[in-house]
Image 1 (cartoon, rainbow, N blue to C red):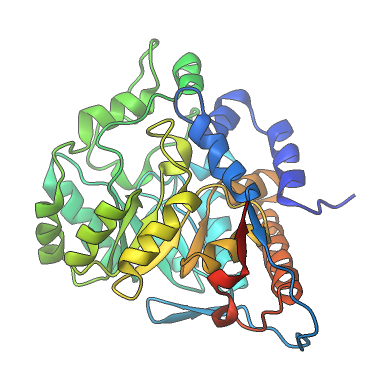
Image 2 (image 1 turned 120 degrees about the horizontal axis):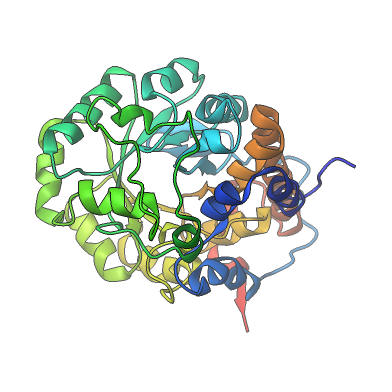
Length: 358
C-alpha cells in the first residue's frame, strides 16, 4: 500500500537506510528530550473546529521574502543528502520546484551549490556556516550569489556541535565516495576520522568560528546584499536583538533537538517571539513538523511559514525525488483538510483564535 502519512514514509526509510545514516538523520543530542518534545508539544495544542463556513475554495499560498509560494512550508537545510539517495540535493530541489516552494541548501551538502541551483525551477536559499577562515565564508557567499541564490540563511546555534550520542558510538563519518562538496577546495580532510567521537563534531570544532557574535552580522552585510535570515533563534530575547539588527527573517529552531538537550520545543517558543517581533521581521519555525495540523498551528501562533527537515530525508530515502514529492503532497493535503475543518479559506484567515490549550 502506498504510504499515507509522513510516519509511514519514515518507517520505510528506516528499513532502507544503513545504521550510520539513519542514526545521523534521526538522532538528537544527549537524552533526546528536546528531539521528542519538538513533536510532542504539538500534541498538547488543540484546534477549534469551526462549522457552516463556505470552504469550497481554499488558498494555501504564502508570500515569503516577497516571493509567492504555493504552500506555507519550505524545505529546511539538511546535510549529506546523498546518504539517503544517490541523487541527493538534486532530487530535493527538483521536488521543491514542482511543489512551488523554496529549498534551503546546506553548506554541508554532498552536491555543488552551482549544480543544485542549475537544477532548480524555484527559489534556492543558501544555509551558511561561518568558518574561522573568513575567506572561506566570503567565497561561499559569493558563489551563492553568482549561482542565483535568493537569500542567506545563517546558522547561529552551532558554535560547537551538540553531543549526539548515536553518532559518537557509530564514530559517524561519510560513506566512501561522498564528500562535503562545497568545501573540497578549502580543506584537505573530508570529515575528521576519530574512533572516539563523531567525525562531524570534530570537524565543526576545528573549522567553524565559535567566536561568532552579533557584531559579525555587519561583516556579512558588507559581503552581500542578499536578504539575511538567522536560523537558530530559541527565545524572545534573541529575536528582539535580531529585529534590532534589521534581519529580514528568523527561524525559530533548536537544530532539530540536536544541540542543547532539554531546551524548549520550538512551537512553545513561537508565541513569545511572535508577540515581540511580528511585523518587524519574517518568522519561520522548524522542528517537529510531521502533520498538516502542525503547520496550521504554527501559522496560528505567529509563523509566516515553517521549514520541513527530516520528513524530506525520509522521502528521499523512500523514493528519491518522487518520495520528496510524496512527503510534500501529504503535508499539503493534510493542511488543506485542516484549514477546511477550521473554517479557513486562506492562510491569512488562520489566527490564534483557533488555538486552545488545556
